[in-house]
Image (cartoon, rainbow, N blue to C red; front, side):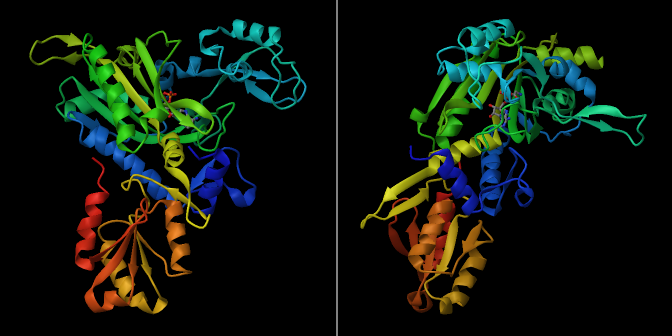
Length: 456
Ligand code: GAP
């Protein structure tokens, strides 16, 4: 793997993929804006996920729930009381750190802080003289827990204001709509609800580009099933989540399953799929067997009966849930990492190329007139193709430089218009990965590209 975080950040900034947020004001830490190329790539990632897990998945339904939810939702889910991180402040330089991160970094991954209590973490940090990554001193406060939810208030007058939270996960929008979706879709258990949307977390240690940010998008899918079938569906979703990544072009050697060492008290099993990011093996997505905890808690807090009535057996029960959750931005970072390549060309030149799956690439075809005077014909071809899939047009600079620009944003095909095009209606089509060129007629172009850019 040739990608480093610096190379990705620079490429993204230079090629309109991702810019630092609020840049002209000096930025706003750990916020990022997707540029013209990046927004297309991210939308394509979301589209591929939605197609696979909502549209093509039998008995799955989509929702788009509100970001702001009744605060009782977060009481029921446990977020108001236990969505916390163990934070410690360095008494010397006043920077804030997560105790678990300090231990993980100090032990180089040999010690697992997830399996420790707060007291055990404090003891470990003292006994091993773990130092502050900023100033190098080992002088921390005790652990204090810090709620990660962003709080705001709702109300038109100062007095009548209510606390509301920016949702820290999209999952609750799926749970609270369980009855609505089941009833209106006449869904029979087992069935699934999928959602893509923004989530917000006041992370203590965000960073590593778009790996951990305070505002991000999640793609989550809850599979409601009967107790007793949950083990089978848990295994099924582990496989589906893995297959999705491999179908997107990930090398399986860059992926691995990692079971959680410490389970939430309601969870029966949980695992992550980790990816070999430039920062090392880290969580890309999670698969959790959440039992019937979520629906039972919402039944308790809302007073609504969340039971499912089996129309065949007449049995009533609160379904179990298998959750599959992946960050769209984190997947974007993994996709960028996996696609990045530097190839040495004849003559010692290096080309940077992004080998995206064609379905993920921002533009499927770049239309390039060999000379500006071929612009009319090239525009005509561009205008025809762009009705079927996103294309880009470039007539500035040498053809070699134009190819290079497209390689850097991962455009799978470049179509060159030359003087023969005017004579016989053929164009040159260059393949991004092999750099091979073939000649084909303008009439064949659309069907040729359509076939290659499908995500199945
Ligand atoms: N509903 C379950 C849930 O939210 P999670 O492990 O906290 O579980 C799921 O988050 C996924 O969301 C992660 O695997 C990761 O891909 C993404 N994610 C979580 N926190 C993130 C953050 N601060 N920035 C970017 N992505 C994040």
